[in-house]
Amino acid sequence: MTTQELVNQIRKKKSFLCVGLDVDLNKIPKHLLNLDDPIFEFNKAIIDATHEYCVAYKPNTAFYEAYGLEGWKSLERTIQYLNANYPELFTIADAKRGDIGNTSTMYAKAFLENLNFDSITVAPYMGKDSVEPFLAFTDKHTILLALTSNQGAFDFQTQVLSNEELYKKVISTSKNWENSENLMYVVGATKAEFLADIRKIIPNSFLLIPGVGAQGGSLEAVCKYGMADNIGMLINSSRGIIYASQGEDFAEIAESKARELQKQMASYL
Figure 1 (cartoon, rainbow, N blue to C red):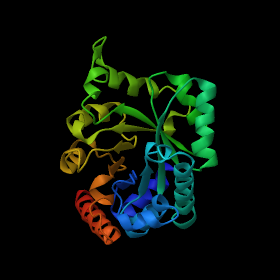
Figure 2 (cartoon, rainbow, N blue to C red; figure 1 turned 30 degrees about the vertical axis):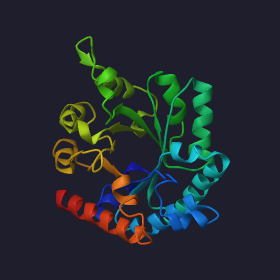
Figure 3 (tube, rainbow, N blue to C red; figure 1 turned 60 degrees about the horizontal axis):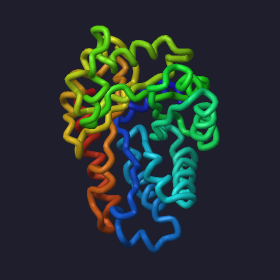
């Protein structure tokens, strides 16, 4: 999916909502546990209920890898279902990979080629030769961890090196990497006050912004400081939507929560 196609979807739906599919078998409705593939059945119900109000889905791969081969099969079924039934939606493998070049190439093949996600989250710590193998897939997007929403982000990401915070150095340096036009960046909603400075470096790059809702991030603040001419944002909500109910009405409640966020987003567009 091209960036322009994503922008078109955002304008059409008046939404820049991304729904995180972080499936924990201890939290999904109990009646699903009797099914052959409860993770996929849960995802399918959430997707069918919320697809009108969002433009992207983001499975966090840890929640699938934790269940071994069966969890990986559930992830594979989920992305196949999305690509077959809702190909206009942007898909993100939240895998946070990043390793030496040949290893990164294999990670890129796994998620961008074999599973056919539109994008993958990548850690930049090992530098450009660990990221460029993902960027080599020119019809895909690489989403770089820039400034994350967790408290530990202050341990390294905001430390000043040569009069510049590390996260700013990461962002500015990444602009020089091959096919960097396909880069997006993760910036936590709990760091909304940093968005103005980030926009000075990457005025129109897309930002994946987790942390609105359960983590306490403010949609209003994020839109105030982070919105670009092309909107340039995907706001992720996971727990606030998918676990809004543990009853048999979970999909209906998820739909209402997604609709709520979509209406708020429409007001900022």
